[in-house]
Image 1 (cartoon, rainbow, N blue to C red):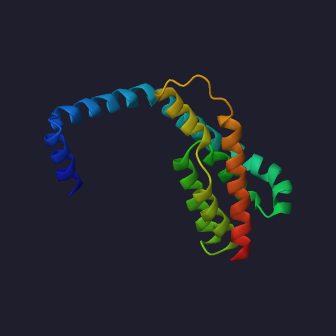
Image 2: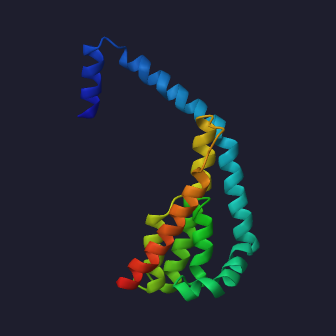
Length: 161
């Protein structure tokens, strides 16, 4: 239905719809090529951190503090990795679900946290690079604050269930 609407608007405005589509697709492809090194770098870094056991070690260390506020140590690596890659975080989520189940407290916090947080560094690097933004202002601080708020919200909401 929307395709017919787009074509109709294009015909009414005397636009060459197909040519505009091809131009947009070409621009999109160039953007993908520009951001590909950043994406590959992030994916490799996450893979190395996960395979080395570094994330689990950090989770155990930070877990001593986070468990006092209701964030289990097994979720700490997920909270960290989610800021870099949603795909890698999904792998952690599946591991958590296999270990604890989806209806456990850990499973609930995990589910809610995945919905309440953003891939801060991925989003900033990809979109700022594509848009050629050089002055980010307070973007990182705001994004980290909102991620922290999302983690707190997931702990509170899971505790209420």
